[in-house]
Amino acid sequence: MPYINSKVNAKITKEEEVLLKEKLGTAIELIPGKSEEWLMIGFEEDCCLYFRGNNEEKIAYIEVKIFGTVKKSDIDNLTGEICHIYEEVLSIPQSQIYIKYEEVSLWGWNGGNF
Image 1: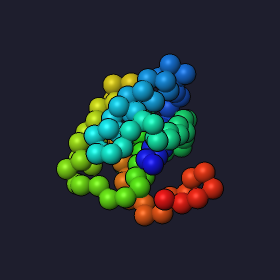
Image 2 (image 1 turned 90 degrees about the vertical axis):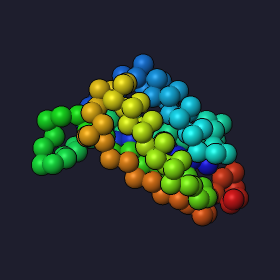
Image 3 (image 1 turned 180 degrees about the horizontal axis):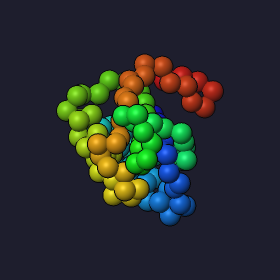
């Protein structure tokens, strides 16, 4: 039940969105037991974001919510891959990306809870 949502201060073309979706779908597999089959992804483009007092460079804020607990080493690997993906696809420098992780103990789906 992972969910990845990103806010960026730039436009995202449909082609970039599809490429991000594909690459994040593969990247989530760095977390054991997680796959694109259960991954939900959201994109918020052209957001008003400031980092270090300015917004002249491209910036990304990404939230990753994962059902259950995750080893720190797996999160470290995922962080590296997500930063690489956003730099490669949207030209956002890795130094301009924040990623927040949240482990979730309750997750609802299909009228019930896990």
